[in-house]
Length: 125
Image 1 (cartoon, rainbow, N blue to C red):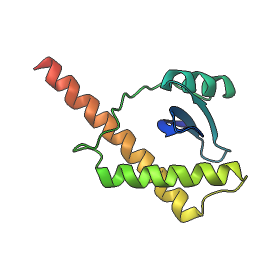
Image 2 (image 1 turned 180 degrees about the vertical axis):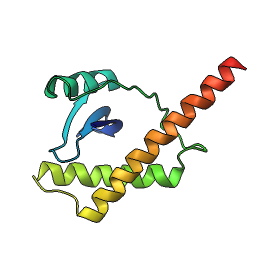
Image 3 (image 1 turned 90 degrees about the horizontal axis):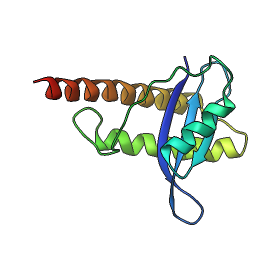
């Protein structure tokens, strides 16, 4: 299964842009950037072949909460920045850091699911 993460980053001018990253076990990861999260996702979708992306959208406000802490966000951000630098050099993260990054992405997905469930419960209560 392909996992897609969309993260706010800074461009060379320090302006906020978004990077969409497709993490594909057993395959090379792909990424794209855009001025908006939607633009980055559209560019990434264009790179992926038919059947590689099964849409699942999670809206995240990128603020720590009870589901994903500030420490987890900081570590995820640090690992993603390191991943991008290495990717641009055609290098990869060491296996322990890649495993930690994969786990943080999975944890954020679980947090987003829990966040969505909590929101749904609030709306139906």
